[in-house]
Length: 552
Image (cartoon, rainbow, N blue to C red; front, side, top):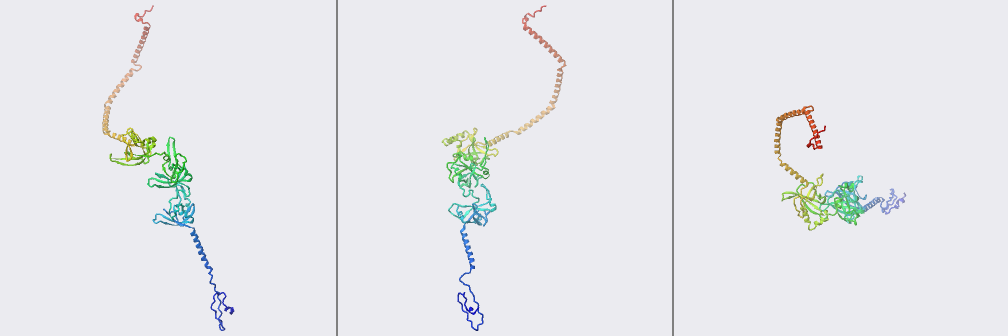
């Protein structure tokens, strides 16, 4: 490089620096090289990489936050099948959320599942939304959840229709009986007992499945069952205001004059239970019943279709014997007609008689005996009519209705020889007089026979019989010692006499010859007498004149 070049400042320098000292003639140092310094007004490109990464991360976070749905909590009785980060929430087999955490509740009695829902699942925050765990199970509606055997359990969901939202829910222990989206109507039913009905049990009409039981609960008093029956929309026109509902899960076995009859809805109803409904006339009702209509669930079809009985008359019957075999609901029979049923059975102490009595309270339906009888009871002379019937011998009696099971029922009938009694009232209830039951009568007769047998002096009879036997033995001994030898001599003499008679009566005996000769002479004489009688008959004058002389 020339000195001029070395003395010239670099062209790329942006700021003027101090000038190098001028080289004199005596300066022997080498010239300093020129330094090319970079410009400071542009940043380095290497810093663009973290900036771009930060921008991309922020964009992903924004997208995640934009697609993120609400976070809710659902409590379950158990955490079986729930796994954080794995268990999905599904609706119509589409994933709408995932369980992000599973923990125990504050009182450790339930399990809390924290669920992160998808953005499109905001409608599942409605207050009436439902959640449940889907597992393999066999229920009244059939077998469900088999797909979870391989994929594992998941949480099923059904959106609600409420405008109110919430973020905490209580999960169902079992899946809803009515699938989401199935249109129809629910009806309220009341029954005395549940039987074999459960949520999901089928509802039948003419043995065709038209719905299912949605829910089953105890009523407010705890004495009955309230249930909700769901009927699909295309069958709701078959349910009218006067439709009768009844249990269809039993077997109706009857043996009558037409033979053996077996009625049931289906084999599935026998296994899982079910209910059915039917109109009184068997036809389609004129107008369908509104949703939420209330009905009574009868025990069977016969009870459901029975004509209205009218108001019941409460009566009490007091029995002194055992009530073993009599149960609540047993029929009250009047000559083959079911007049009512037993409502309750109790025990009371009768202070007047100083003994326990068994009161049986029954509900009687006089309308079953005919409208005329019911009108008589409703008239002013109704009490007198019943009193006259009691005076004629109307009594209550326990009878055996089944020899195999020993079940009893109350029979009302007329007993002519019953003791006199009157129809009375006690605490607003009729008190019917009773007579001992058939078993009690048999026991009484056996007791009477036993008392009579107890009065027989068996000891005295035995002593007399012993004396008689002693005398008989003495008589036999006397006969053997005295009478028998004499009888033997008599028999010997009789034998000798018979031998003598036999010798006299033999063919060659002289007596026989003389007897034959005498008989021959008697025969000749009789012949001559016959000739004489014949002659006198022809010549009666010979008795006077004599026999004429024969001419010579």
